[in-house]
Image 1 (cartoon, rainbow, N blue to C red):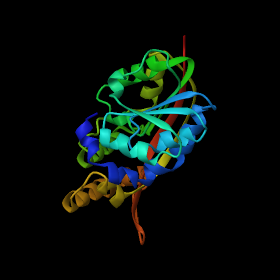
Image 2: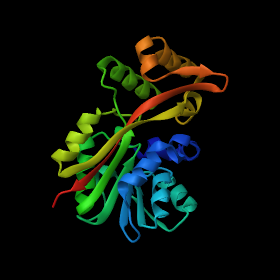
Image 3: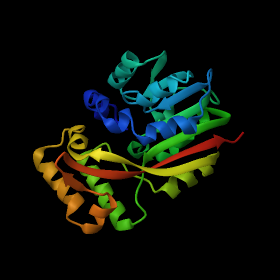
Length: 246
């Protein structure tokens, strides 16, 4: 995950409905089960919506991100006291067994080394603590999954890959987390707003919309549609909570 890729996107992400609200925010907070007094880490916090939601608990929340401009926005808009720390999730600047809860929402697909990032999240969680991952995932159909990857890569050079749900759950187990619960949901995307977050040109927007709609299977899988209110589609999402083993 590159600092430069996100430091110029603060305003766009601050207005993003996907990050500001939606089913994944409520589910992340529910799965985290943060209690008053818990020490919670939200990694790759971006503009801080997840950290802010967890701080209302009220837990003691640390918001971490590689991009300093994102962190400045997170600190300035926090409803309660939130500590911010600039650090890469692949090598978190915290000691072992520090946090009661670690959350990562809408960021895992940006990690070049997903396993390394997951190991770091588990490392800084205390035994019995929770690690919660919420992220877009690849559909089971390989053709549709390939189309999703091509679309995301065209729209956002910082995109690495959407993992399959099974890959994320297996990885959690392999690195020392017992999967407590998981669920599938989806996030509705305003196509043009989604494009604007990464500064997509009009020509590329046309190319991306064709990629969503020309193939009937892809169009149906992501429910790509045009209405009087705009163009819309859905991304599939996994939310999972793992308990760190001792």
